[in-house]
Image (cartoon, rainbow, N blue to C red; front, side, top):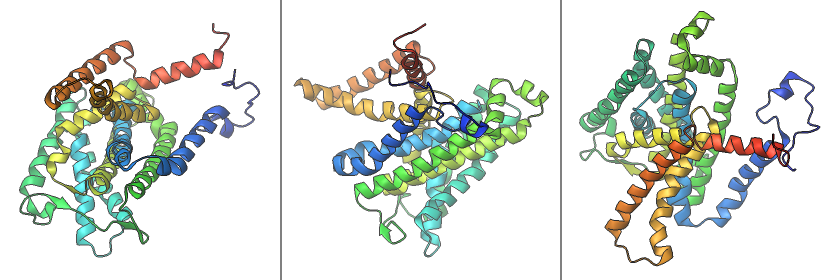
Length: 354
């Protein structure tokens, strides 16, 4: 009986088109954001920040960028790890080569580098689609792996290919402790989630979804496929590039090209599929599923007191994890976001379902 919208009348188009038209949704989101900013920094342990919360936030941001391309525009991409690497190495070069370069500016410029490369590799989407486009974007993955290993300029002439950053700060405030890193990543995620939500609600978002549903019909009604597809690649690559910079600078601190391998690309694609294609919330649900489930599965034998060695526990984790992914996709192919939407609809009708 609590989740009702009775009496919530809209008297203008602006009120009817707001992000959260139902008051309860707005209150829940505001409560979650307040909890994340004000309570979690005092309640979570250092291990939770380093192993769970910071990876979850950064991978949620990367999945959000991929969802713009795959979920909203319907362009399959298998090169997300490459765009993360471009954002990371682009931010690194701006950070170490330009004296006094602010951290936030370096991360955003790294995202711009990923945007340029993303648009370049998005050009084939104008003529091909489906699995053929997936193979074309996969070429970006292999190209960046080769470039960052062979071209020493990208790694500031590092002999080992490994680079590192230190002394991170924003406006004189250091970003060193796990709590500071968590709040820094959380601020980025909140801002980009809000921007993405507004983009997909606007004209450009409707163009993306029209291209996704049927590109020929979209072109007939006046939507420019070239503009729609390339803007989707640009926005997606920018968000993914910023996420790559955060992953390298904040989470890893020291990294090499293997940190952004093709495994990362598939991991992000699984997040989007499991969480829900074409859903902002689905990006967060998918990231939570991928990040949290292996940790929980690893902890189960110790919790129940089962004498299992480390190697067997690791293999069992992969097996159970894979089986759960397959089971979940069979039960709800539209992802966790669809389950969440169904639950909300039932709450709006309870206790009088029809």
